[in-house]
Length: 509
Ligand SMILES: [Zn+2]
Image 1 (cartoon, rainbow, N blue to C red):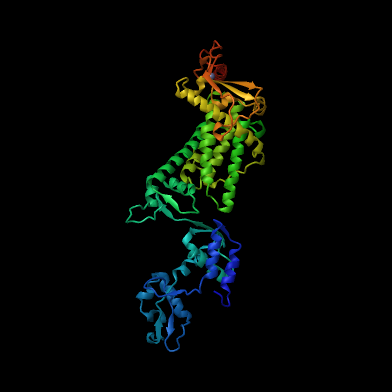
Image 2 (cartoon, rainbow, N blue to C red; image 1 turned 60 degrees about the horizontal axis):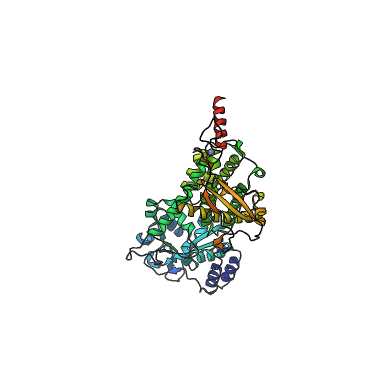
């Protein structure tokens, strides 16, 4: 380690350029290299890869004869290393050498030396550059493979064989115990693959903190199956909403409503998160963030609000075109981001739109246009969503008490201070709260900002929920006084009457 080769010093120097994930792994490996004793690569074991040499008894010198070595190589190539143990020594020594003059060595190569040599025959071929971008293994390999690979590569090539090292923890059972056959708590990857599928197994890894030990078991896998189902449902909902979509429907960014621009802002944040993870190999937390986006921001908020536009507005309506513009982007981004983990599910979602001759695995991640990133919009919409939560909580109460059935049967009186009214100008509260009508009342005596009661803010004048006046439109289910006003379309609101008239006009044309 410290002889003429100065292997220790060179190895420590080489480690300075290596990226460690998690970062604290750097200390572990460097301190192990700093204190490691000299490396004896021969071992006296009953089995292993033999150090296939002969020693001349008279001189005690190792026999250096190219022809002998070629015969050993030939035998190993055709029969494997066991030939050293099974063949008589004269086969390797050849005619002209007396086996009695030589001692055949039966020591084996240290297994870590063997495993540490992978870079010399795996890397450097077409498509596999040297050094590797990444070596990935469990934390025990600081003593083993990571270290032996480093020492051999530095010794033979002067550089580390990896640019980055990712160290992961061990897999434990649900209660944090080591898996063992006697405890009966072993979860075999193949069994999970057979019962839940490889996508769920990979998703479990991505949802775990891989820097630490990982837990797995029936309950945990059941939860992962549930998380998987929600991601899958998001993709399926997008596909439904994009039925018949053509590029011609797409609207430019400047023509999108604020809600759509907010979705794109969130998407650009996630795009940044994914791009950073690709760069740094730090994936912990990325998939939970994608899942949170799909469930909280999309399913429970954006999709819910836009169902009405998507199902009931006329196809050429600017809002509907804006929604489908965003759904198209969402589908492309989510399919490609999920593809490395939900390999089969993402491919299914991609091919459902673009055909079997296309593969999601050949797509690059979409570049996020700079204009999508809009922190001011994000701040405004954080407040809008806080107010919305207050309204929906009241509506939920009214539903539970039997005052109303669906939220569309409600109308809401929302009190805002003058400040808030100015802040929320242009916000369509009825659309956001999925009710039929919202009456905004301005209270000039108050200046407090309307914030989510859950977040400890003060609430002045809780929204008042009452039964909406008017008739239920049979098409969109909104309850409006105008329903039935168009005698040609009894039972429909004016919006629905005009959409139906337009589509009939189209049919006639
Ligand atoms: Zn309607």
